[in-house]
Every structure is written in C-alpha cells, then in structure tokens.
Image (cartoon, rainbow, N blue to C red; front, side, top):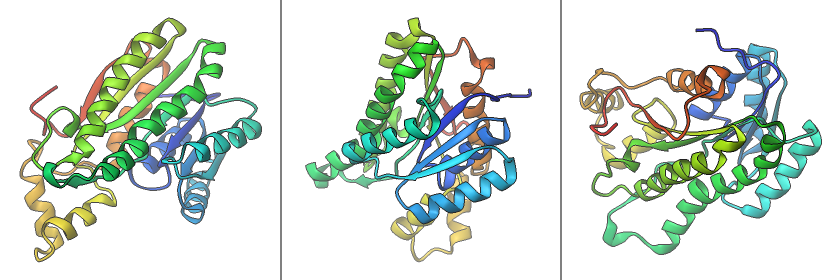
Length: 261
C-alpha cells in the first residue's frame, strides 16, 4: 500500500533517535513536512539533516524537555510561528523505560515519569487541537507499551504511565471523533533502540550483549526483536487517510509477545 502524506505536517516528540526518528523519517519519505522535538539540540540537528538528505522533505527540529510544561508551550509557539499553524499529525513518542519494584517506587520518580509520558502527551495534544478542529482533520498517535496492558513485576512506573496513556487514547478518541480527529495508541514490544543496551547494563551486565538479545528474542513468538522501521510503518498507516475509520485502538506492535490484544 502506498501512503501519501503530501501536504501534511507532522510533529514527533522524542523524534531524534530510535522509534521516534524512524517515524519521522517514514513520514518524510511519504511526503509530509516533519517537526522533531527532543531534548538535545545537537542530536536534533543531526536527525534533521539526515532525514532531509534522505527524503528531501521539509524537516525542522526544536530542543525541548517535554517533561517541562513551560518549555512545551514556548516550543509550540515557535513551531506555530515557523509553520504558520499547528501540525496536522501529532505523535506523542517521548519517553524511556523506568522500572522499580513497587515498594521502592518513590513518588518523585513516579511524578517525573508521568510528566514525561502522560502530561506531555496531554499538553501537546491540547495545543494541536485548535488547528485540527478548524480544518476538521487530525491524527494523534500515542506511543505506549504492551506493559500498559500486561504489567510485569517491577515494571512501575512505566506500566502505570503507559496504562494511563491507553486510557487517555480512549478518552480522546471519544471526545474528538466528532471533529474528525482520530486518536490511536501503538503499544511497543521489544524494538531495537537505545533502550536495549541500557536494559542489558541493568539486567545482565555480565552476559555478552548478543546472548542477551537472543535470550530476549526467545520470548517473542516471531522469534526476533522488531526493527524501528516496522513500527514506523504502522504509525504511517494510522496517520494517513487509509486509516480514516480507525480510532480509539491500542495496537500491539510486538511480534505477538503480549497475550492481550
């Protein structure tokens, strides 16, 4: 299926590396103008340059700590001024894996995770709504995790934040449907990203990295860890007119790893 996003503008948070960058690149290759938001300006600039060279599309990047609501507001003002309006497509992707046993879960650690993964998604979505409502067309994709459906021991606060993200998706889809704004969640399984080396250091530092990856892949029915581009393909479909009757879903992109649909 050929996906054409020509004439659309997409904003991807956490878009400088990993899954976010793959989504930004896939959108640009499909004809969209792309806005990348991430914390470090140097990494943002590198991603902008590389994606523009590959796709030839308009790509802009902004450094912003999305866990800071004031920074979000200031950054969005710059984006609206530079592009003349808000984006047509929003991908709330910023986040990282944060895990503690429940009895060691400090409230400040929980609040920080919620600010990064949930509150930022709420704020960016609210800022995008006026433009989307005015044109009666919008796509919002919340990148969450399969742990939001099936929490494992020691997975807080991520599993809590991601479950809230799925609930947010359902709520937004119900309220924004009359404005033709479609809202869906994509649930990450094991995808190659910067998080895998961090997981290796935390969980099995004495195990060779390749053995660690092979051990993790054994728990996946497809027998392998996913590629960022495979995740990005699903996001691109949801962002397009081809998905015009898909809203309120939480789709697993996990190689059948999760027992819950």
